[in-house]
Structures are given as structure tokens and as C-alpha cells.
Figure 1 (cartoon, helix red, strand yellow):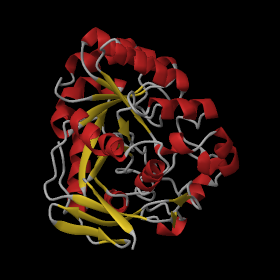
Figure 2 (cartoon, helix red, strand yellow):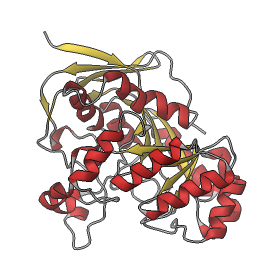
Figure 3 (cartoon, one colour):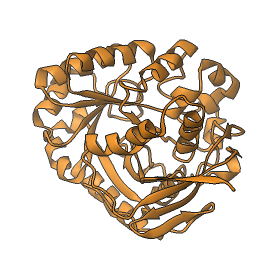
Length: 352
């Protein structure tokens, strides 16, 4: 008889749901279906949409659409934009957190000037998190701002040895910083990027074996969250002359991480901290009563055919794992079972 385990509803604080402007890649219904298929019952959506979620009007319109479509609980980030910085405080009541892009992103959300950074830290409500896309030396900038303004900063998709070691030193000094790591940066390297071609291209780029080893070394203490950076693109876009960076992850994150548990690379208790307890605490997200995820501990293979995401492919196609999500119950209702999404559009809760 196949062994099963029960987990709390998981949280992913870094997803791209592509609304508005990218609905051919993903939308609120398909993105939240993918979440449920991966045992994830709360997700936060990033603001680099088209137009970006940097004004109260765009945020309100996105939330109105989400309220009609979502199958699990969803919060949206506001995006820091130099052109709209004077409207940032108006966005706060509609946003779960603020995202600042210090490195590569598409659209007008790249922040490269000190006055915009100062305005973000001075005016964004202190009870809501500031998250940063910061790579290389930008991590040091974020740590410096956390220290200067004495307020928490969360670093997205940390991927390099020197970045995670710098964050570990900042934590040792008592600075209010947290960070997340993606499954693709834990399980893939630059060699996989070569093998996969555009299907292995994302930001940050996949790292060296040394980078991957450092992330695993710091998983027991320094890393706070596993977050997917779920970023769907169609195969046609990926196979074009100018393929956009990004891969999906909502459906594959838990099977991959539970495989690592089976291989004694981390404990089940630590996995629950990384994928439920810590992200909920860091982003001050509400609890979900009567919510549970049932997982079969059985050999399985990740395939493109199992993908609920609208894009229909995963860089982990063909990867053998040791776990499979069997059932998800959200607030007492069975919303996913045996590969079928049962939740109704609009049944998820919209977070502010």
C-alpha cells in the first residue's frame, strides 16, 4: 500500500500570473489551478505585467478580474516604478507587498536611482513587506537599505554562492533580511541551461555546481522560503528568435522538494517551514482553516502532459520524483483530487 502524508496548505510568495497583458501565457484561473495541482493554496502574484501593477487603477482592475477567476487564495504585489512613485502609497491598501526590481526585468519597473529607492523605504507602510529582485552587488544595496531604514527586506530567487553567504552574514549581524530560493536553482545548473536551450533560460540564470551546493548548504538555516518564480511563456515564444526568460514551477515544486526529503537532503519539518510557516509569517498572510494537502510517497515522473499551467511545458519534463499530490482540501472543500481541479472560479480569497 502506498504511503501518504498530510501537509498544511503551502504558500508560494513569487509567481507571475500574467494579468493584465499576458493572458495568452497564463491567467488567474490557470495559474491558481496549477497552484492547487502542486499543493499550494496561497500565492502572491508579481507586478511586472503590461501595464504594471504600479498604479491604484491597474491594481484595482487586476483584483477585480482575480476575484472572478481565482481557485485558491491570491495576493498581488505593487510594483515600484520611478514614473509612478508619487502614487505608491495609494497602491498599498490593494497590495500584499511591494516589489522593487534592481536587476533585469521587462517594462518600466527597473529602479536604478537612489531617490526612488529612498521614497520606497520612507513611504511604503511598515507593516507590509518590501521584496527585492537583487542580484550580485544589488544584494548589498538591499542589505544596506534594510540596515539604514531598520525595516525588513525580502530577497527574491537568490541563486549565487556569494549572495547567500552575504545574506548569512547580514543575518548573523541581526539585520532584518529574509530570502527565498527556487527549485530550479536547487535542482538545475548551467549545464542544464545548455541542454535545455531557451527552455532553461530564466533570471537569475542557472548557476554553477558550486552555487547550487551553497544553496543546499544554507537551506537548513539561512534560506527562509522555497518560492517558484513561476513565470510561464508559450512554447512558440520560447522557440522564437528572441525567447523571453522564465519557467514554470507551481506544479513541480512540492514533488521535487519531497524527493529531496526522501533522499535525506532536508527534513520534512524543515520543508514545512520553508513552504508554509515562514512565507506565511514573513508576508503576514492569513491562516486557512480546514486546509490540507494529501501526498502519495510514490515513484512518479514529471511530464508536460500533466501541466495545468496554460503554457503546457516544464523544464523538468522527464524528471523522476518520489511524491505526487493526491488531494487538496481548502477550507473544508476538496479543490483538487487525482489530477483533477475541482474548485470553481472565484472560490479563492483575494488578499490585501
